[in-house]
Length: 288
Image (tube, rainbow, N blue to C red):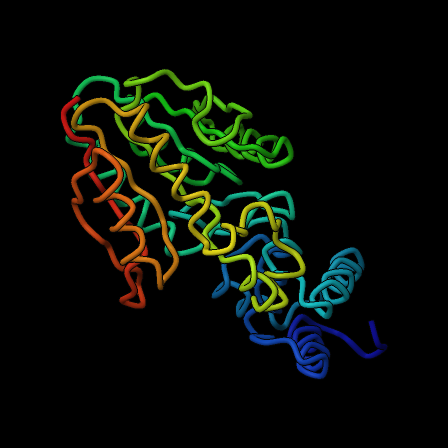
């Protein structure tokens, strides 16, 4: 760091200037996230430390984080964690970063499971960091959680999160629901790849260049994985079971068509994200 840095306030100011000169969006909040991580506090807590002189190790770590942020790497990967449903989730380039719209999906799943008696079986498909499965295991500990992913790296990260949170989840490396028995699951929940292949190249650099393509690319129309997942969910769900998935903000009509015209599902709701866009489709498996 340049000479003359004496406290966190000066360090943050210099970091903000560097990121803004590099053309990085949301520089102030990203800088504060790094500081909060290094200080072991929340974002507001950083304000209480502004007058303090950081230890040399913290200065070096802050500098290393700045170098990564200047390339537009997501701050969640830089600090190695993010907040999801009120807990810390470890994240890195092996899996997508958990996002607020996925919290809406978890809320829908939790509400259904609270009314489901006994030990409901839940399959979280394309689990990534495991954030959905871990959150549901915390909230509904009587449920049996299965979490699948094609990526061994993502599954290793998800297992790390389950251990850190002290929850019980069965992780399975498989393609969607391959190997899961017919009529054995009460709830299938998923945040599948749903970005059209051509659109992947137009995503913001922070997503396009750093988050795993396998977890983003949904084929030429963005519906390739969704279509397969709907068919697989219909196979494994019990009568009256539920299927819930996150969809793109322009996919509501297409998702409804897939669910209503080709499979034994009855649409329950389309839930909107915090910006008012339909992002979660829920459907009931009709009687077998």
